[in-house]
Image (cartoon, rainbow, N blue to C red; front, side, top):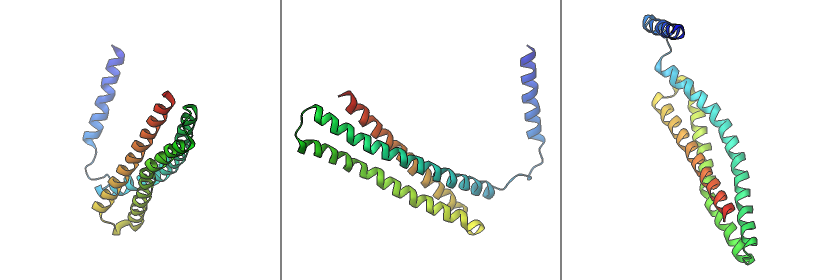
Length: 154
């Protein structure tokens, strides 16, 4: 019962503090958008680097798994090569997504570097584009993991 009382009082103090805070002393919407864009630029740079490392590993693993499955099935060399080529063709979408992500990252970096000269709408749109492409890359890498798992089961 005491614990509930202290939790209630803690929540009450926080709510009262927020309600009584002076209006207009926080950052402007523009400041918040630019700050978030700076965070996104830095996070995306690290995320792209990590995703690139993961994708190279998955790319190699998927090809090796297909090749091993072909050899275990006793397929001719031409069919094994065709399977590997099909995987390489599937990965063209991943490499294109990485190029698109680098382009979006550069665009957002340029807008953040422009500072006050940049339009808030452009910054928001560039941030949204970068987030969408990063999500697309994660989805494509997930598909690759699924294909590798499916080949390992066969």
